[in-house]
Length: 252
Length: 281
Image (cartoon, rainbow over all chains, first blue to last red; front, side, top):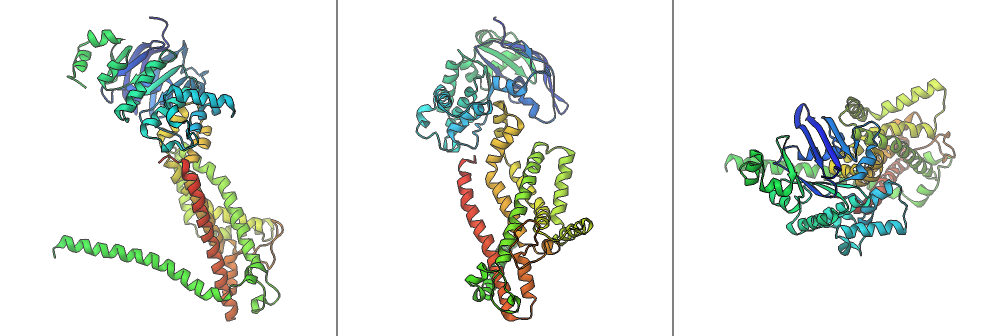
């Protein structure tokens, strides 16, 4: 395996004293889709949100251990959290459009990081909406409120918004669970295209979706890292009995 | 009829009756004021300041009080807004902290303080400093009066902004301030506007707080340090005269006061519609 993009080392997370992640050590490969699977409440989202330190915003959470992104520990005092989050974009479970126009939603992140209005911004907005395959549906109504879009369109808007700030990593927290099957397919298809330029970390509890998407798989169970490895190996020849049971549908 | 059905109809009657009392009182108040005041209401009433014998029933108007009230309430609302918004945003950012809950408690207590107490407080302060009654002090005291109302109303609407929406902004690398100014305040804008309006309505209608601190004058103030007349006090003074035609003018002044508040509600309703366009439901 090449040098990992993200390297998690001895990560523990406690939520109000209860341990939700137990000594996780795992590497996440560059330019692949890494899927984190496991039943609900096993710590998948916590692990994901630790990677761009969104976990800092949750009250009562304590994290120990190290997470290296491009070889730098993100918990280091010198790390600028806003810059870290810019580099590791998030697609949340529920689409969360911002209270502004479709155009402004995509431009928001760019403007925060200093972009000025003009042709260049227009072009970036267009290319991001194209990359999330939303452009054709919204190109004539960019000034309309984002709330007018359907839920599926809103999630693709969130994808475009995340892409706009040119991240290196896309963290996806069950981004299709609130969507209809067609919209979900749209998102999955885009991620397959996007992985040539981005490292994707995708959380899901749907095994079939994991099989469709994954290059690399991490299986969490009750806060423990049970098994991880290339998708082919893990799905076809799981070593751990618990992984076997989960894949067969006996547990979870 | 069995017991449960009886209960059901009893509560239905209770609900309808209570609702009728509310709507009835509103109509009664407006009705009495308008019926008594309308005959005395004319153009000179709202375009002229009082002349020499105005309070004896001679000509003139209450322009001094109309403009004065707008100055006091407008200034106080603006001043209170500048203080309220940061408090409301602070409360939402640190909602779990002890200082935040203490701040909320303080605001709730302040909300319950009678306006005459604010007036007396301002008056004591001014005596201590040897100051005269003025527009400036009217603005300051009324601002204090409406501050808790405005802040707590804003607090409630800002609280409604979902965590997911804020998280989306943070996830793009926005700071807390950027998120507050660009996302939270936008989403909460209609509610913030309502809070401002509520405060203005309370401020323009209050007599007791300005009684001691802003004085009363027949002139439109030209500086912040001039005394200023206000509509509630205009109603109070005119109603207190022994002349029926002047008493009628008190009701006409009340009609003007009602009219201002009503007009503002309508305008802000229309404005809110424009602002709710982008709000995510």
